Image 1 (cartoon, rainbow, N blue to C red):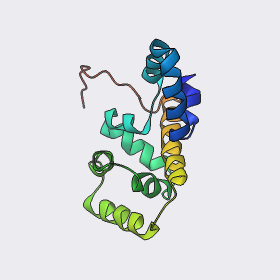
Image 2: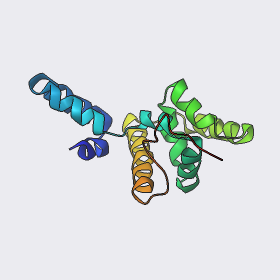
Image 3: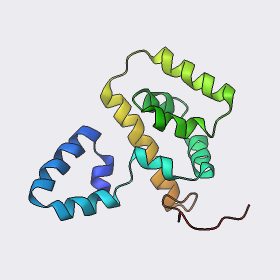
Image 4: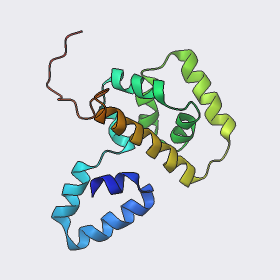
Length: 135
């Protein structure tokens, strides 16, 4: 069920979850816990985000970040060079106004790619926070 919500437009999914929470609050929390959203990308290791961006169509990220919070943008900016950040910001500015549904679709494409890469063993979506990493 969480996978269904992951592929839905954000507004539609939120409405259904809100309605479901009134009748089944425990199940709603369980579903939310299983979902992987655009906001969850901030929990990924920088290497995983870099791999996602390498496979992502270059036109998707500017649209997705057009409707993102400053914190969400910074998740991506932290792994980019200053030149790449400026180019991305210029692309976002050049887009002008973007429909909310296009922003949500772009975010969903990034999440879908992340989940697909996780299934293929290319990245980990839920790395252990206390897990020691040796580089």
